[in-house]
Length: 325
Image 1 (cartoon, rainbow, N blue to C red):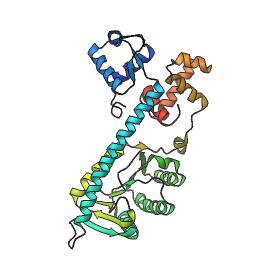
Image 2: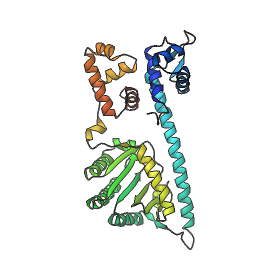
Image 3: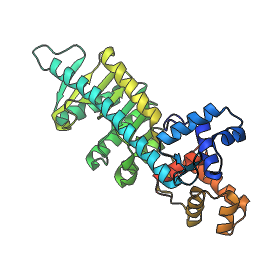
Image 4: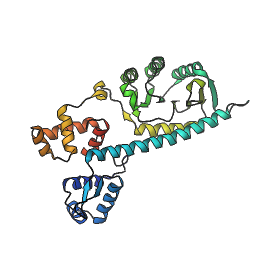
């Protein structure tokens, strides 16, 4: 979380301390946490910048936190906006490269390592050939949301050929495909065959990389019907591999268990998340729900694990993003 939200562990601790004890000032916070006042001041500055903490209107020199649910949503909005900006920059760089390569290959003597494939049929024939020739791995960007039945059928057929020979497949799609039955079925088949599938909020453009030696990218990312460029020059392949690996590291795995993608928290789980987001302790939340504090902690631990979070704060962010709170 500290990487994606620009928050350090101490920032989270300060936030939680202000939430639990709004009567404390800077010096008191520092003394309670056992750290230098300047470090607490730096944390508060970051929290102020993120609009998670603000000065108290009632007591000068004291602080108050923004409503946790609202604060979580603000963080998610900022994170998403930065993610979209980053993807747009990456897409712009990749599309500029594609335009340069397309121009280089459009004259009488094609650029070395660049081949133009005109039309969808030519692209599909090349994909089938690459599927037969692949020896180590196939890396794919799958943008555009839900895929057509014909495209999914062709992809599944090629995947079976590749996986059958022990070649690794890693595919990145968009988050919204988790809600599309056809694409979700395809991704489950890929996982069942030994492949890997992850999703992100946005992708630069469609791309297929084979054995880190060949790549297919669209001639025009806005109109895939024009065909693709087949790239093989190492200087062209290396940045595309780096782009894929960067996106793969930030993508969210699609679990092998179908229930993961469609899990709906129980009313008790939603109520517990809501109470904790309002600032209740385990004990007070448990009292509201008429369960023991031990049961409340067990439920929360299960939710943290299911959400893949490393802390309650991060679990709250992910729960808000999923609409559980």
